[in-house]
Image (cartoon, rainbow, N blue to C red; front, side, top):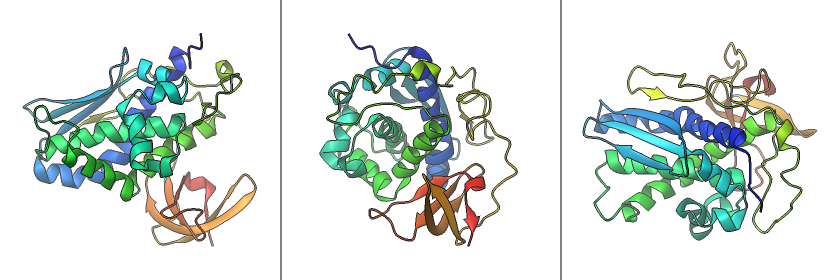
Length: 276
């Protein structure tokens, strides 16, 4: 019986989901959250089992847990992933243009749990009515504004950096897709490493992807481009041009001049793009 990805890889991917919450989702919504409650604190961590959830207490402390066994179950393929609400939402609501593979399912799981945080902060979570219209309005907004695409782009980038093949796509049951994962350089994250003053965001991210393969581990002096700059970068031998939309410490968001689909953009390392 297929067991999916091993525990080490699943823990690393779970920690990467927490990292995406702290580096993509929280910064995008920080001002909005703090305007509602300036004392909000957020912690993300890897769970021991399948349980994946958002929880808040009366002291404005929020916790998002990504269970490593959730990742393992979803790594089995679409039939297993479709048992999860977050998996079905991609198809039923047309997120990511309805395309499902392991990384899109995981990226959406991060968005799903963060939408519960927003729902809670904005007072739209009601007892007995968790997945309500207000929740899906927040989730739709996250995808419509492209923030969900940024989460997916981060996961794709980090896995691509270490040639980590996560395997399946909807309708594919290729038993060879998971071969060779034992040689990937993913490692178990140890401890919560990153903190912010207010709100506090603790993210398990140390040693996610080997010694030097990932941009999470590389020293970076900061990007040399600015929003609005015309730039180019190369993907699999193809030169892509576009304009810088957003600049973070480790990544640059670029809107291509000739997108393959509406709303498309790329998230690349600052050392991979050059001004035109």
